[in-house]
Image 1 (cartoon, rainbow, N blue to C red):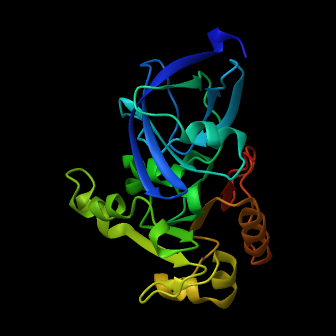
Image 2: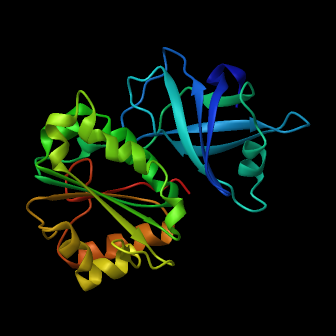
Length: 256
């Protein structure tokens, strides 16, 4: 990619969530625009000057003066191994183009917004929660985050703070934050995978209402196998994928 297609941004902060999970903020060019739920292409240079590019959803709000991203460290992963070695003050490249269709404007009407995520697939949903229109458009916002172990619940405190946020507090009663753990057994947290808990009905029972095809609008992001399996399960229940010419119930992100 030619140099005029990207900007060089500086890492301004790093947060370690677990041994293999971290988030980081970078500077942001005023001209860079995106829709909540979209992703950027990030580049990291190697020792010999080669650049490796990978897609990363924005965690930050569209109006923040910084960009924030959430990452897992993949063993032997060329990009994340380089990224994990960067420090505050180092440089990350950001493609000037925004990408992705995991955005609420793909839906028409709807009353219940379900945000189903595993691992770092949580990232775009944080950005969507920072979009005030999301809270205006829906009666219920169900944020489901599935991890393997209890300590992997990144952004847990931030999500809990929406109820006290000066702008979102009047609407925070709409948010249902449902945690799932697939490997550990933790008191007061559902155990199992998203697909398993949807099939059994336990997820909907925990939330307090069912996925109704007239009311539900569902966004799915995370492990590719989870995305594919959840999509199939919901389609079998009569829900439909949303298309540009025909809005439906389901939107997914596939950037792997």
